[in-house]
Length: 555
Image (tube, rainbow, N blue to C red; front, side, top):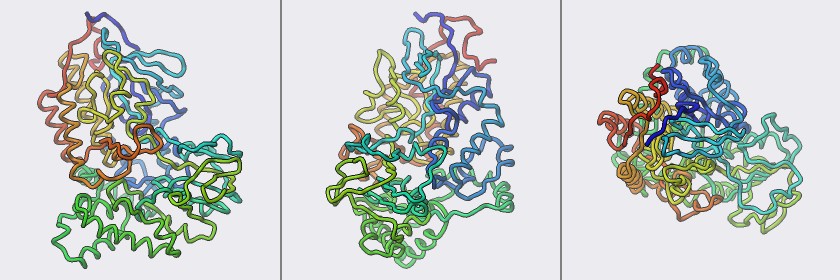
């Protein structure tokens, strides 16, 4: 029998990043008693923590910002087509302050455990400050890339200089002038940071295990006239994002790869390569994502562009991936990345040929030699998608642990709900539309759908919602099936759950983390589920407590 029990909050949101900010805005707008718990000492999520030089959007700024407020769209001036981290953080603070959202946020509150009380249908959250908070619902807005991973190298504690993961770049900044710097990794973050460090440090050693494909960002400033024009087109811009598979303004070329001549293909690629943003990836032929021959031809084109930009032929070949084709994993965009290797002070160390052995007091040791360094930067990625969930001890019905349920592979319903974990909601969970699209566009869609679900529950007197096992199995099977037609299934990337520094995520263990059906198809599915009365979700009635203690969104 459900007992009468008053909770501290009706809804607790975990995370005050892009998703958490919009989520709390929607909750307080309809009067729900809610709070945000944030482990850092301020809001911003990714854009608060990643302070490394060179950090910026690879989405067009005006497509990344929130769309929900016409006032914000009118008042905010993006300074660059692809905005930098300091400006992005200012933007998020601007939005939060405009709507007084800080009043509903608690900082330095890391959630250590979340356990579902089945008898009372509530969640109990253990917070790092010692409190235990209760709520009817928990919304996980924890971010896709918020748990950094360090390499499996002995001796990290022995190094006498400064060392840190890029996620933990000192907030006060770091002067690298006159320093010998080593950076491990050439993934998306490293591709942004390396050209900047190359201009500052006396010597830069880049330790690369596997090269990454990349293409020019082609950034520029936005004038007052540019922004005035953008403001007149915001409706069209967001409409274009909603109709494109990736949630960007870039849409696939409608022609088939094989129906145009080689000359026409090259002309298109030359045009896209010189244009800003993801066009080279997302405005290309669809076949490059699914057809080995088409992808190989395009990859050869990009490889030749790299060869044109890197003076030393050996270095150029070392920077060209051979284990995967262009575009089958997340494509980083760069500014003068390849040109950085033309500087005499930048040295590319191939650690496939000469593996790193350990960290030593004075730097790094490979099988071939020691490298004396003043600073070591670990640009070694994240425990993507599920990592932020795994770092909280989440227990559902019967004490089942989410980390155990997801160890082999995540299973969700729509990427938003999990069987066995009632009232645990995710606007951007694994297998959701947010994971593989322009993030804020997916976030707004996810949050809006969850708010409609909460209002549906309020209107029908429900206090508990849980995805059925069958619905979860069906959705997960659909996600897995979509991988089979995509070349990304072969990639060693976070799209396939790969991370050699995390147990169970090594090569050969594919985890299907993202929905590959595109934003329009995903949104259609969400709409269909809602219009069916939320088929695939089991609901239970209100707990036996005073009328005024029921779902507080009724006020």
